[in-house]
Length: 195
Image (cartoon, rainbow, N blue to C red; front, side):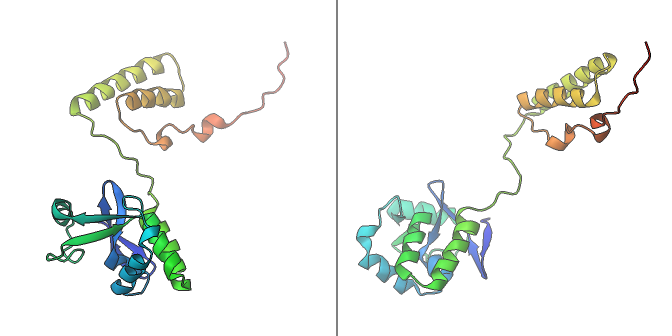
């Protein structure tokens, strides 16, 4: 299932091609609150300002067939179409300049921020860790913890060591797990001792 992104008051299904987020002509027209013919005419009048692979992709034949199989939203591409234009962020920007309306600039800012450069919500991709690697790291972490406790090492330093061990095994440990507790940050002034 494809992600749906809100661009101002519009809901846009995300589209990717060649590892890049792109947008169809119909979606672009919808965002800029114009019609598809206007976008197509503007493109045809300014074709020399657009570079294929940089501003847009033109899919035909096998590429178009592969794209139709990739998208799950049937409204994105008409099943009878013989070609489709996919606009990159730079291509969408060019269309905005050509339209040159207050609304198109406002919409492009929102399109750029929410669609082409979405904010990632603090979730880092982590490669799958095998069960064996997880068990090995866990057992080693427990062993380190026992040894370090016997040596009188602070809980924070133990957490740092175990965290490092887990990271080496490809397991991400959230920063709050190894944060120095407030009670370890407190420095108490000692009275001068008489010698």
